[in-house]
Image (spheres, rainbow, N blue to C red):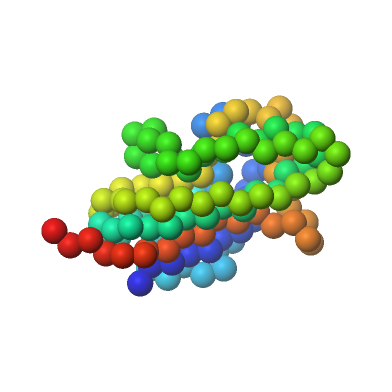
Length: 135
């Protein structure tokens, strides 16, 4: 079994191509998520599902991507809200080979603090193994 959920980004003002490190693992079954680097490493070849939840400050652009080895972007998006703090989620189902890595990355420097983490706003990254593939 492989599953993790981590919250609390270490940097609320990430720069372009910076890995978003979610430093507080709520759980990390299988120890595949590294809360020091923000990188997930697949312990077995299989189909995985990943989800990230982002909360941003008002009037800020947030460009993000789920990236796996060799700059292969799995999913990417943009968030913006002129008038209020906003939260949204992104998810992807991904085939990863054993030892292949995946992380959440900032795709464009927002120029200031963009991620908002407070009592009613929580940024998080989670993933789980859906199916092992044996060859």
